[in-house]
Image (cartoon, helix red, strand yellow):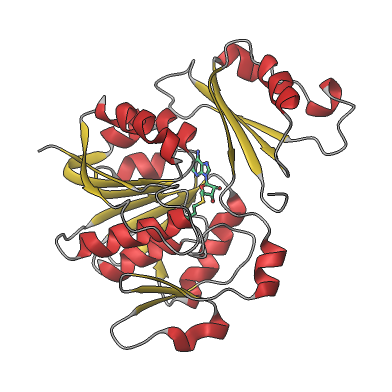
Amino acid sequence: MSDKGWALTLACNRRDAEAMPEIGDVFPDLLDPPTLNVEEPDPDQPDAWVMTAYFSEQPAADLVDRITALFPSAADVVLAPLPDADWTTLSQRGLEPVRAGRFVVHTAAHADAVRIGDIGLAIEAGLAFGTGQHATTHGCLLALDRLARRRTFRRIADLGTGTGVLALAAARRWRRAASIATDIDPISIAVTAENLRDNRALAGRSPGRIELVVAAGMQHQRLAARAPYDLIIANILAPPLVAISRPVSAALAPGGVLVLAGLLRSQKQRVLAAYRKHGLVPVMDLNDRPPGRQRRGEWPTLVLTRAR
Ligand code: SAH
């Protein structure tokens, strides 16, 4: 697993988050210290923070304990491999096109993989996550493909857009929809802007366009201003998905659909429970379609709806 990154996530209170020390000061012994990040996912819950530590390799249990101990209020501690990390290796290998329903995600070098009737999405391997290679992206694309057969959406939000792949897929399927795509990482948003150009999609606020913003969770004035959404997609990790369950649920229109991924199978019930609390119920089970080499249902996709 050394070519994958790992993330340790935990919930904590504001005091612990604000008191977070510089990692180098507390652990001068570490050669490759993790990057620590704290965020307040929901401004309405000012004492509910989420800390994520990013490691380049799977951390030893004692290091996890030492980091957890920096946050006395720590709860919901989860250590999980990050979906994809070694972009150099991946791009050197050359990405094979990935098919999910009518969608085919491919690099420029594989444009010929797109056949009549397919919806081609041109995405290069780069600094952002989301080339379709990962099971979570694949699961979301399948969910969108299935939803497109029975629903029309007009107001779409893609949270944690990475390369923009899911926002682009949705915009191709629902051409008149007005979309917003966000990421906590400004690099992702820059990459997404490039990918919009590569796919001849337009940035902007009107129907048929995708507005791009840098935002953590639902924390952005534009996300609030454009709500409610009839489709929200969020492929992030389980702890942030739980942390933002309230504002995300509140931003979903009655009868709207929420597609969630990034959670491991072991985290599915916890994520479902968080969203059920806010009135959302599952509508589809997509876990019977595992892509390629992923273990069966290791990264489930949840499709939820808000009862009318
Ligand atoms: N949607 C893409 C990328 C998923 S990877 C796909 O399906 O392939 C998850 C993305 O979420 C990363 O780009 C990461 O930067 C972003 N992210 C992580 N935490 C976030 C948060 N709290 N709010 C918004 N984006 C977040």
